[in-house]
Image 1 (cartoon, rainbow, N blue to C red):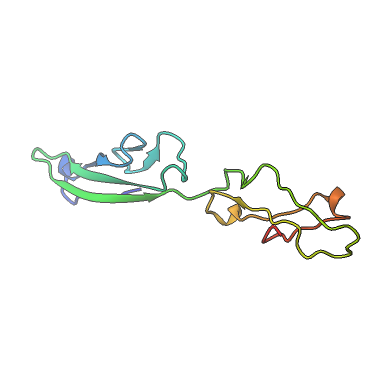
Image 2 (spheres, rainbow, N blue to C red):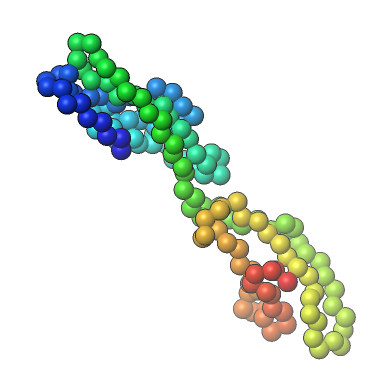
Length: 140
């Protein structure tokens, strides 16, 4: 919310807010009486991480006076994208009659979310843990 004040009496002291230009033009509205900025549609941080708006406030005097400011809006990330494995299938081989093998294969994945909730963790389904396990951090 933007705030402006005009100490003039009557209509000369009444202010109205307006968006003039910016990278978020059309994606944001401003309540001309309160200065509250709202979105007009859902934002996606992976598409556009931030916006800026050029906003001005004017009084309602017979000769209106104007003041300008710039607003920088950062879109905060949420965990809204599934991680993607680098391959649909991984192939590996293990020599027979070996009790312990340090590493069979390393799986890798990426997650476009940057929030702390978007951190990757690897795991093997419970039913397969008899024979295999995976390092939750490295995918090994």
